[in-house]
Amino acid sequence: MNTTAIKALERALHEIDGIQNAKWGDPDFEGLRVDIKTALDSLRQQPVVYNDLTLHPRLMREIAKFPTAAAAAKAWGISRQTLHAAVNGTGDKPVPPSILRKIGLERVPAGLRQYREI
Image: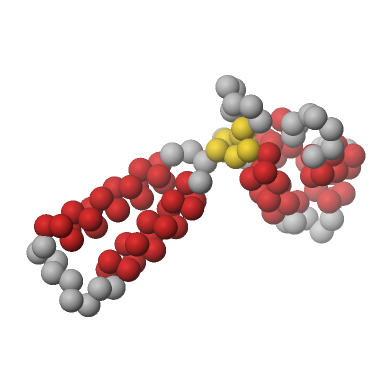
């Protein structure tokens, strides 16, 4: 959600900056610019939290850095089966901490299958 909000605010700021007849001295206009910049800075400071659905694309990007999934598993010191289960969401188990660490994430202690960057 943070990335969606950041992109929306960036588009709004870009549109405001592109207005030709803008009165830069107008307090309402300047206040809007300041509010958007403040919101962007605030959102960027919050840690990104992943869930099972948003974790999958990140996992796939990390695996794609290797020639094959088997090569990724070998480099990460896990079995191909463990990696396959994590990628396909096999079973009710969350992604193992060993894989999370390899892709720069950890489980949120109080979260139900939520992960954050480490």
